[in-house]
Length: 311
Image (cartoon, rainbow, N blue to C red; front, side, top):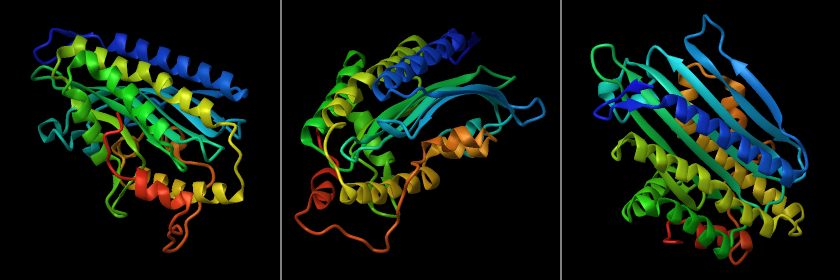
């Protein structure tokens, strides 16, 4: 525990224990669903590395459900916040830091099962001359290839319900933030159908802000599992797989060009294999391709890849 801005003691050990437990719950659930065990890869940064600490990467590849799925826990320290972490708070640039988080991406094999991302994290920026600054961040978002209204409504309604105990204003705010953040500016299109996203969050004090982060993490399985179960047995062929691989290219573009988590990991000297486990195993790019009007592929663009009040 350490003293934070205006909030007594900050329980970073409690955050660590929660996140390790969350990682294990999610991995166990998907090992049961997939039928293939995840590989567990414990890692630690070398003593002479600029970034200290370590983590646990749990990953499955070529599974029955998941073509690739990764759930990573990391607890790292550094002597200087990288630019991606201090972009919203330039006054903290140059401080030492501690970062604890769980991040996951699941890329299912069946194109009718959406890709999903979830991340919950905690930062402390240290200053020997003043109190530590701390904040929480995270969220979850859905990236379908062949979307249904039922799935979109369920995912967003679960996100809304998770945030309701913290005030009615938070879900619209975090949903809008998600829509704006997971947007490919160079393509002028959303990555998927959104969800919720928040960052630099400490306005409820430590205990309530920590509770909010836990609410997001605890809601993940309820938000995603019913969608998986509804769609995992749907028949698909080469056409659907080809479109899935094409749309996965947008996922790669966002993660490598815009994502602050990826940039933070690479800028801070993080573990490259764990950072890039979010990338799909099979991806295609086509030059100036557009779906034929009236097709299911075109419906993704016309009906889903635009902000809507799904909940």
